[in-house]
Length: 214
Length: 328
Image (cartoon, rainbow over all chains, first blue to last red; front, side):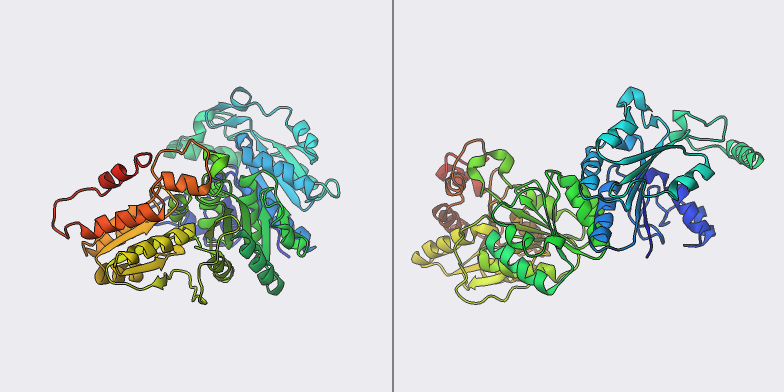
């Protein structure tokens, strides 16, 4: 029984495609066609790419669909889990809160949400646009089981995911505290890198920094 | 029509375990027939149409045939992007059912008038758009859609509509149903206007016109062949719908213009302006020129107008003179 993963923040397509290619869903060489004319690798996540469950790009779509997948499995007592990765800015969308209200009502403990909480959204700081705090308390008030983690600590993430569901009968949410552009000093926590393409020199500098860190 | 729909859906669900019904907290005294018998395949998603439609997409990804159900615009417009991106783009097996299409909820006011739904739904990719003309068509359409993979929109009336088809019908998605044959004037009706269209045809026959009447339950894919044949074999063609711009009239006009037949054509439809007064469905229709008498007058004027090549003139100007309260 295969689990399902939905990347609801569809602007993170590049990392999903790279992961899928590395895992053998399609040839790594195809990554070079990303966003090029005629490529199936569009700038936002699109179905038709092997391994992609759901197209995304317009925010607030992934979690309701994830609820449907989880509900189908729960009603048929299938041992299938569903994971949905949300951005923080995406939590402005009302559709997410409809789904956040829905999942505990139907005791969907086979559903896990991961919030990529980097505290920046497209046009500014989350706290300045529509502050989500207290985010963990909001989820708790909606009857979700909540854990907060360092989203860059792989060991902590693995330990967290191995503890799912956090409480039987409740959907789980992992609030992953992250830093946008983590690991590249000139990109970290800087809004402009939501939009800019690095020059060849910047890309090399970024790769060097990442390799040194490893 | 909603009774025919739910009865047929229960029959289908008995035979097909993939069928689910998901509602947006509406359907009191209608949906119990399904929810009592198939509780494991029924869901009230609450007053949350975006989530309802996303859930339907998720269920369909898991292999289900999902009917979403609510009234008027709620399952259509409140969740339009979920329909476009989640359902249509992925070509999922979700059937959107709206009860009270047109002016069925007349007195409830403009929020409850489903008068742009056909235009919106017919613009969606992969979407079949079906508006049955009576309970017989509604029943047949429900069965046909359940057996046709992919997204669909089913626009139903409310309850208590007359059974108009006296003979068994041969219902097929994408096919017109010829109710009467004739050589002078073609009336093409969609949805709940079929009864009025039958009355208009009767009035025209009394005046010795030979009338072809087509019920057009499927708007997308449109029965282009039936439209083309009517254009070649009759002399004037009117579409009749309880809907504003962008519906049956627009779909048929495109076929006629591209076919180049030059047939005299007029779309009987609602005006663009929101209806701001209360009224029964019948009262509001009549105020908009959607009565048998108004249709018969429009048809006669159209038939007697000069043929192709004559100076262009909108038939609307004449209709406005006849129906002072109505169109714009």
